[in-house]
Image (cartoon, rainbow, N blue to C red; front, top):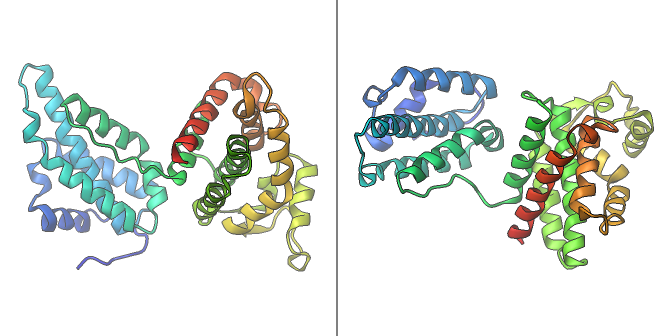
Length: 307
């Protein structure tokens, strides 16, 4: 009935039609329709989201709108019984469904991390426990790189920054898993590599944007096929970029991180240096040592829970 794949400009009418077909519900029934429309159009345009992703987005905004209105009434002394909000869980479940089938699922979830968190917190304030969080390695990678970008004040990371964040976190994760499991967690390591590949596949950038110095640029170019005659101005896709970084410097970085396992902060502490300097340039870890280290400790904890 829906099956309308591909990226589009804002398509509110289609998303609202899906909402009506599934729940017999129109935006006119919401407490603040205009705020839903404004946020929908802003986020949909920012991400150039597919129709499926836009439907998931609209459902999330409707939920947030209702929960926000109920909280305002509660603050004024008008209590809403939590049993009257359980219907919103059905909409949340369908939002997860539309997100999963969206070709740009990862982009949507990255754009709505804060929205998802707010919905979960508002649900919890009414005694309802709901999380959009999917306990997989892709989510862990996305969440961690988002934290790191926020630490450095990067609100709109470039494709190259997203690529470097993903690959350096992947490499750090491999070192951490080796430190945890002593070579017995190869299946999780393989999964981490594959999910990172999928995460970075849509990205496009220049080769020169992948390196932090000329030495590393030379190593990356050397790892690419000679027949391509690659220079720093050559534009490559995400898979090629991932493999160029991973195979040129990945093994050495894993060993370097493991060699610092006895440091006071252990492998996560040294991995923080590798990740921050890898994304932003040598020495950049000094600006936010503790914050990035804490982000990598959370990354380590999340990976451990995923084993």
